[in-house]
Image (cartoon, rainbow, N blue to C red):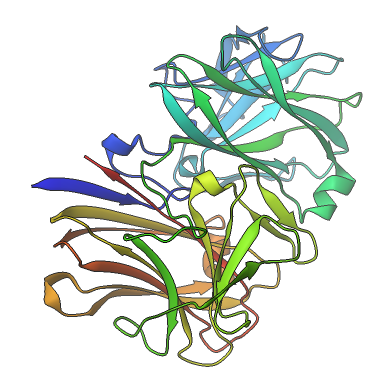
Length: 397
């Protein structure tokens, strides 16, 4: 029997055949993630030689250059830890967040690198947040030696104004082909001001799935639609249009309403600045679902099995819009011949906040050819939920 793994990409990540999402762990020394410094962007790299507690007895480990603040630090516990002296909170280790502090002179870069364990296309997510209240500015650069020569992919001004304009977070998401041993390097420089203190850099790298949803094409596996109840009731969205005129985001909807599913069809992330919404690149397989404004108006994305097998299904939900308050997610399947609700999940602002902006689930399901897994969104009594991002992919063992 074949075993398939249904993976919610941006999301989490399961099966070793998919090469699950990988996040930094400063305690590991297998060479996948490395932490160091350099006097120029890109190739110049030296491992941090010092290692110790950020403060005595804390769960935060700091690697540094000769005991200086030129360093990388990470919380190694499963709960957040706060440095009350410096107004700094370190997320749990599972979030994959590394705090980078550059040196206090020009061209003193603090760096974290990801080395591809196998050749292939990788989805990379990087999020920057200022950790300390005294932050003024810094400069971030993202480099790669893909293709055997070092090249800068992104140069990002990390300023108070930029953070305020992006609600405290600056993100970059991209897909890149790496040969085994090639790297992505995320680098911080002080940009002329030592008082930038730590910048929190949250990273994920994962190999692209073999099969991801593509809303611009007809597919036997993926379908997008609506229903007035959870589970079996399903009608394909009949409308297809640009999310906004000229944007790369395609929206399928019910008669021109916001009751819809949308996806970025370009290879670069796209931001709707009017609604504070950023759509990841197409290669992430991310579908944004918006339920109807009335009770029991579900937006749905379905995956239909084309062969008998066991499917490991993981899903991560992310609220896309700043005005989000709450929504309700349901995960249904007709495995075994009848429809049943595997779980109802409350998507609330409080739940997202307590889970560092993402809510994740994982299931293992036996499906026969033609049976379905359905992820469904309903407004849960409040229209102002806007889009919820559900990113999905499938790979075959």
